[in-house]
Length: 390
Figure 1 (cartoon, rainbow, N blue to C red):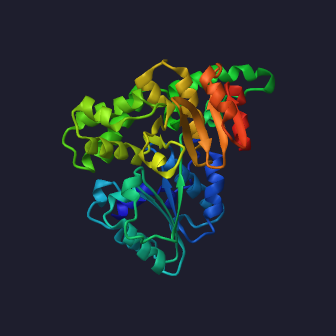
Figure 2 (figure 1 turned 180 degrees about the vertical axis):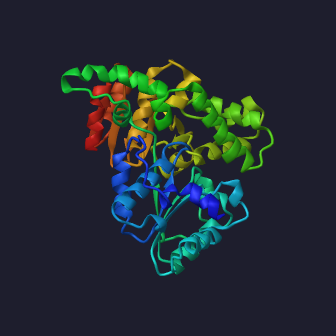
Figure 3 (figure 1 turned 135 degrees about the horizontal axis):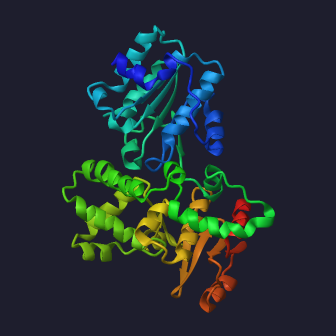
């Protein structure tokens, strides 16, 4: 194990390399703020969204601030060579290699933590008995679920999302001056095609996104949930992407694929737990919120584009607005008398997305008459900045 740990942690033997990595400052600043907290920091989000890169950037900053390099351990727990070792054994071996006492502080960065059985209990034991600051990462919300509440009060979760349009432009090295704001539309259309996964933004490749989706389906869904028919799960995801931005009927998808409504519902939850999709409930009384069809959105526009192509650019714009507002506000869609308004927040802000177009007559009537504290029509990329004020 010692040789493997040295491979994962080259800073134990050499000065940290100047790798050309684009920093995501909004997440780095949040992670820096958590360094003085005892709690375990749990990074979640879509595969390949940049969780590992963020951990390694924090490691680099810790070393630059004077933390001894041999007091920092990074390891990916999905490594086959570690499959016989639990987390505690790996940490103890690390302390043994560098002769670090239990009372001496160490920094642990544990990638793919859910590959270890009972990882919640192991992390709790380390948290309670050792002087540590721990960061862990996983791409599956269902596998992260802490059924025994072992880490309650001991952890802080941070979801890492795909790049937004501003980050995308930064990664591409593009600066748009105020006088050139009309260029935003063209770049937004490019963003729809490339999506917001950092590696794909820097080197756009359809095959990269296809492999990512296949990887998630195989590792996080079919293998984890012991589903034998891989193809039906792939077909299910294709249908989800074709319906993104629309109300979703679980029963209809079930009929198309000849699976039961219960199976269809389970598959939907699997895709949601891997952060490939997000679901938006309907605004209304409790039973309406729970029982009405939910709207579905893709977590990354590049993945949506892979299945949808250039069709319905308005749905990409709506999807993007949802991604900007998600986790910032508690969101619903408004549906009354066969007419829909894209979003309403729990604090009564009404928002309609229109991609360089106008509301139809029924929408205009509902939008105008519905009681809300604030109303916004976002009808161009240039007007997205209005969402920053919410």
